[in-house]
Length: 174
Image 1 (spheres, rainbow, N blue to C red):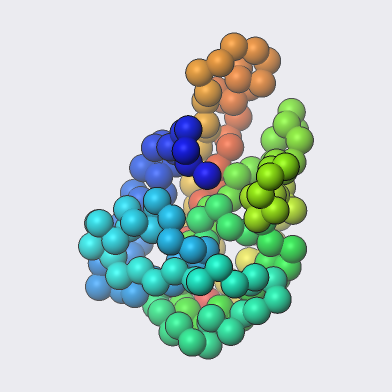
Image 2: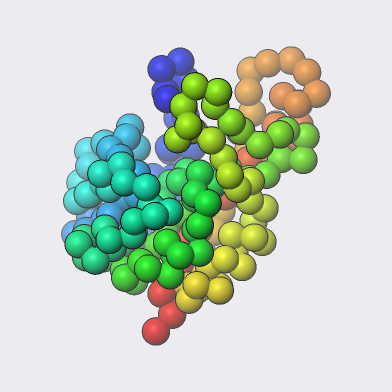
């Protein structure tokens, strides 16, 4: 997935946001197979376990097997058909989600070669907020940032000032 580009800005923002709210003594279940960012979290001293590539839309048993203090879902929820069920099944008290925001000037992303690399949901911030509220989570902190590209044109210009990413820290309502 990152053969040609590496999302340094997104990774930097995500790591700073995570460090702001999680101590390295807390255990993390990172949704998705091991990836460059989960390796970064481990190199920063976090104890991270990744899911094994199971289809989380159909199988949420990982939340029973892996009792961790924190769940992270960085750039995962846009790929899922049923994030409501997944959010309802999480047993951890802390949750971090980042998503690419829906851009009015760009169509939903769909890889033609990788069926796992497709966006079913193109969220607006309020949609993710509502989904979290409906599944028993309270948002504690959130951030947005842009993702400019080094190209010429209308879309690259719009990317300079249109927020592209949204990250949320939420806690389970008891």
